[in-house]
Structures are given as C-alpha cells and as structure tokens.
Length: 335
Image 1 (cartoon, rainbow, N blue to C red):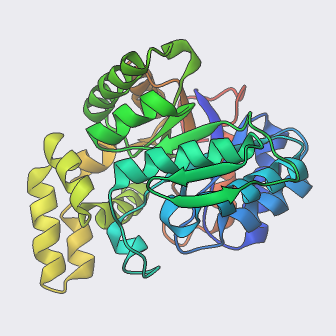
Image 2: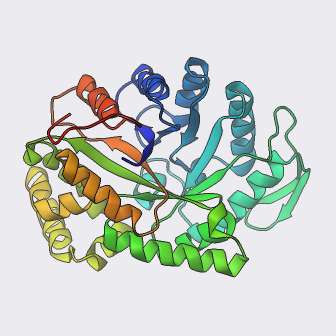
C-alpha cells in the first residue's frame, strides 16, 4: 500500500492529535490537517508538534485569503521552531462559498493571488525585508524569529491553470478526490508547468488525498463518500471536473434535488460508480487496485483520508489508520 501520510480530520483538537500520535507510532511519514469548519490548522499542528517527534506535520490546506502572507510566514516560522523543522506548508484558495460566504472576504484572481502569495511567503521566510507594489502592497517588512527558507510549500490545485502554476512555483501539489481520468489530465498540466519553469519532475512531489476504508460491505462506507462528494457537486469548479470525468448526469441530478430542498435525496443521486471512482473503499484487493491505478498516472504518494460508516465513531477511524499503516500485512478480507 502506498499511504505515506494520514489526514487528521473530524472531532476535537485532542482527536486530531491522537491521530498524529498513532500515525507516528505506525510509521507514517506525515500527518495533514484540513481547515474548513473544524479546529483551525495552526492550533492542531502546534498541539501535534508537542505530542510527536519524527512525524512531518502539514497543512492540507489553509486558505490563502484568510491569512495574509506576512502573518502566514510568521505562523510557519513559529511552527517550524516549535516542531524542530517538521512543517510542510500546504496552501489553497478554497472556494467562494467558504471565503466569501463564511469568512466575508473577497475571492478574487485566484491564480495571480496564489503566485504572489507563495512568492512573498518564501521571501519572508528567507529573512528578506520585503517591499512589493504588486498584488500585495508591502512597504518594507520582515520577520525575525525562526525564519526558515527551506519550508516546503505545496499547493492544492484542481483546474488546469492552477495545476500548471503548482508545477512552476511549488515544491508539491495536493490533489483531492482524484479519479484515474482526472489524475491523468492533472499530471499532464503539472508537467507543462514544470517544463515552462525549467524544473525537474524528480524534485516535485505529487500527492493525493484518497478517501479510503477497508470493508466487506461497500454500501456502509459508500454512503459516507457520497455525502462528502455532495458538497463538491455543488461547487462550480468541481462540477466542471466531475462532468469532464463523465459524471455530468449525477452533478445535474444532485443540483436538481438540492434546489428542491431535498438534501438527503441529493446525496443519493450520486451513483455507486461515482463513489467508487473517487475513493479506495471495499476489500483490500479493491483498495490496492485503485491505488495502483492512481499511481500509474504519475502520483507519487497518497494521504489516507479515513472513511467509516455513519455512527461508527472515532475508534473505527483509528482502526482504518491502523489497517493501512506502512508495513502491515493484509489478508484478503476486511482489516
């Protein structure tokens, strides 16, 4: 199995830290924290840094619109100091629904903003006194304590322009919910960006978050995948990707039921096939086959995003982390 990292999701800060501790014990390389509506990523990583000693700790992702480059550089430098240099900075734009609808901030020029943001964070982390008249107007600022220009920066990317930008300026890219068809297109776009910047593919890390769960009963976890896919089906940028992958009928049906106020029915419009293509769930053999197919497109590493049946609780999620741990021998049935 190719899971090198695990996502810390759901529940309290303490539960996130429990996942990080277990991941380190089991030999995972990294633990990644999302930032949407649960605990904020900075608090989680600070707590996880104090509870682990080897594990790389990563944001996967923090929205760039919610923290300006100067604040983000200070935060990364502080976390690097606290963790002994184990931080990976994962940035992304998030979506207008979250940035504008939840944070009350403008969502503008995502590609240009991301390019400027990454450049400024790197300059601050290098200890430079920064002046800028571009996307961010900065009159002369620098950070002092803990600056570390070696911090890897990963970009969450979905559409072609952002994927190419990641290839140009980032140390790695984070794909979310990839299918084999989408991953093939994404790798091609990233490689165009790498070529444009004259960069070596061998020095670039292509990472994918994969929803995963070992089970003999596909339906008990497929419903959870469908419910998460539902929110993405309502987002225009993901609608385009899903439609290009051949799931336009599902996207349209989800939208129709959602607009009619049928929230539960909307999730049920997502087919078993769509759920299966966007996750590695089922028997060990099925999960391995899905990861092998994704790896064949050029993805370097996978981050485990545990999927458990509704009501199963945190212990079932921890069992999933154990089941997929590096070096664990797996039989042909549920783990």
